[in-house]
Image (cartoon, rainbow, N blue to C red):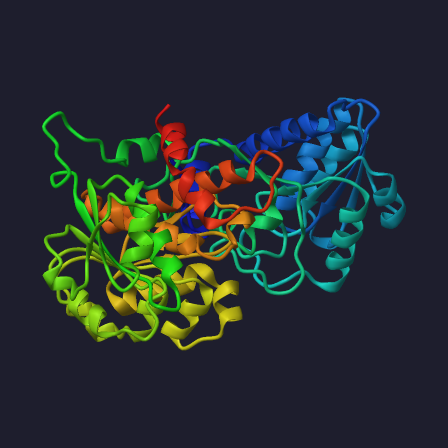
Length: 474
């Protein structure tokens, strides 16, 4: 599992370690890892031209010491000092001893660079870049690959928010621990490829952010035992679709059938369309409480103006996933009154409506908003988008690493609701069900889009879910 920690947690761990080490040891460890990563990107260090963008903090010192290591290997290294009076003096002296120099003409040096190292602002920075730094960052991007030191300058390390201009890196070398902003958009897409350098920090067991990997998902997936039957494996109820949107019911059922439960009960007006595609579905005209026993409910995709069914489902004593149209009728009081788990799966626009905010505000502050939703509704919330986040009222927020832009297609969210609801029925807690559902959904979309990427449709995502399952467990 990939974990990320807040700036305050990382700072505390650094202080604890520095108290036990000779002065400067931690920075030298960071610089060694940074120099090694730069050397890999360059391929051939001797004769290459490296430009360091150096601010006043420790990130600037890391860049200078790494530059000194590259200079000793034959690279031509020039440092652009944004705050000469506050530059890290030890790092600057090391660079000069190794044959590096201070740039007297930043535009010219950047134009000739083979690699640019961004050491402008550290993890404690707030707000966007100042004009001079922003101009250098733009010039660097146009001239050569950019490696960010710890995180791209100008992004918020704790939240992933970007206020103003920020560096757009091809790679980020981070030290000791991942920071939340490296895993969450809009900052994540500015970080490029991530590389973690172990500098010996001792960190708390519970992180601020978690990102599952194949092995974590494989441990959580439900498997039938020899004595299992379809009811022991779990039955998921799906309340979806309408005369106007029968396809939403078909897609939600498609995801549910491939999500790990033993059976799917469909309740709604699109039974004929569902049975035509999936004859294994158990159908009922409704209401939901008369449809038979289920271990979870999925309600909302394509539901239209039907709110009576939502009241019925929320009154049940099993986990409930609410998506799409179902979210329009929710209030915090209705969700908080439930005894069983509730999982809400909004996209940014739906989350904005639930919070009384603007969509752009939610997209710019995804971590803050998913946490606020989980607290306000006393529920688990899966916030869909460029980085899908899963948050409970407390504990680490999960970040899904498998998404793709090709998932921005009609009906893909209905499939996600189905597979996630099926995992709920199979017994996974809401946070795990949301995290595993998003992970498999993203993998399936990547498989559907192919290695080079191509347009996909939601039915193809559902069709690739078994292959995604096999990928995880192989």
